[in-house]
Figure 1 (tube, rainbow, N blue to C red):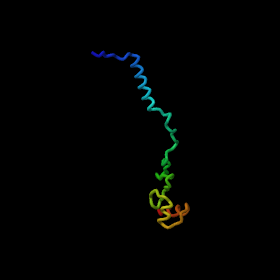
Figure 2 (tube, rainbow, N blue to C red):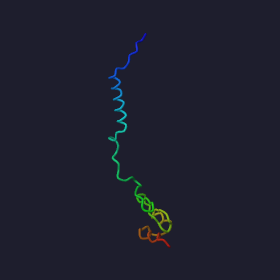
Figure 3 (cartoon, rainbow, N blue to C red):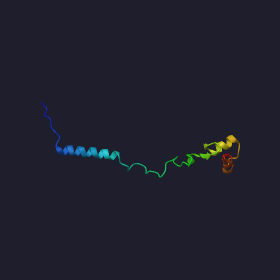
Figure 4 (cartoon, rainbow, N blue to C red):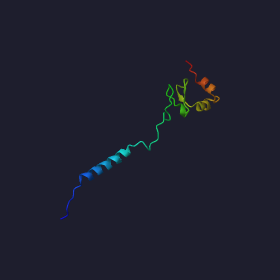
Length: 91
């Protein structure tokens, strides 16, 4: 008949400590990149336009647009001055 042996308390403590070390290592931030101050796209204007994606608010159209796309579609020069003039509210 085979003899069943029980783990000694020191073996159990070692296994417990090893398991805890592995689990704690999973949550380590040592290998993670440092957090950046702001995420891409987190630069929204008052109207909610994402400036880093090229969007600007146009009062006339009442939405965020890419100025060069509006200039091409509406037929005006692709300049900040022409965009601002086009997007002035007619109110």
